Image 1 (spheres, rainbow, N blue to C red):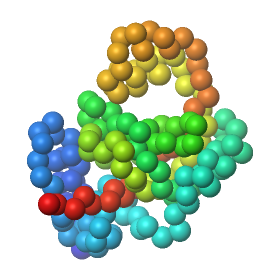
Image 2: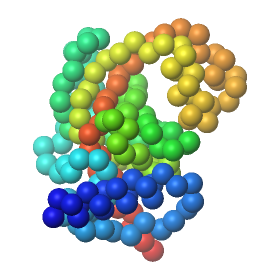
Image 3: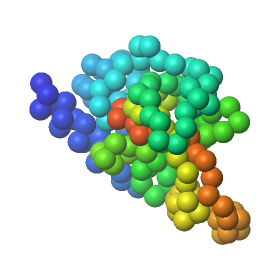
Length: 171
């Protein structure tokens, strides 16, 4: 059973990295996790999920170097448009930069505006100007917006080991 799930996970990763628009079909793994979610990374459930507001409060108490294992829901602000290797989640007045454990999976590039559930490690980091510019370029920002980045900033970060995306009803 684990081998079958591994094969399905691998297939999902490979198909989500393609630049082609294809219609995704539910797999056996999705049905086992939750009938109404696409699952990426480690299998997680939608139990005991913190709200965006609760997670924002947790971030306020973190200092650089601190980490906390959590599972929370938030809305996707944007996704790496090159291959889906990161996404930003809305966190009140801020945002959380989500990367994926060991780059083991990627997100579909068209999920901005959707609510997702992420599970993994939350932390705070000081992001360099170079890294900020790199992510801005991957996110499709203009040359002017990229050039305007001139100082390191404190960022809310998250290393996800699993993500759930609600399935979109087909019409």
